[in-house]
Image (cartoon, rainbow, N blue to C red; front, side):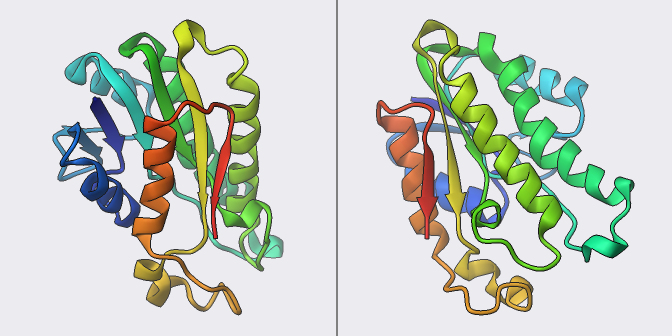
Length: 199
């Protein structure tokens, strides 16, 4: 398959690329350092990415930003980071990418554990994660041409633990490679509308 991995230079993205690179053609997209540049907050950038890449069999998203702040301190502008980056960015990747995915292809988006297991200062991220899960479940029944759509919901990653341990007291992190396996299941399998939890 020809697979477009968006966020390919990040921790999760690198694990997905490593898992798939020996058996598939991988096109890496990222803000910097990829085969093609993309800013998920910009519809113009997303459209230009697809125009540069052309037709693919699968689109994978492993990126999406959100601010971790106490709810009482959060401003609408702070919350907008998750809306623009993780939520709207991923939705637009699907909407603008439908015509670039071959019949029977797939999209795999990323959500996360916080929508089901909340932490202090994680409200904005949890909001975006839950919205992505709902979007995927609903979009799956309307996807054209046999295209499938799923989301991967990983726990905090072992590789990122040093940066996030203070937020995730009592959580047991998972290796990025375990989350990458869920992406492989989504891409190479036949299910649609699923949320693959990696805990």
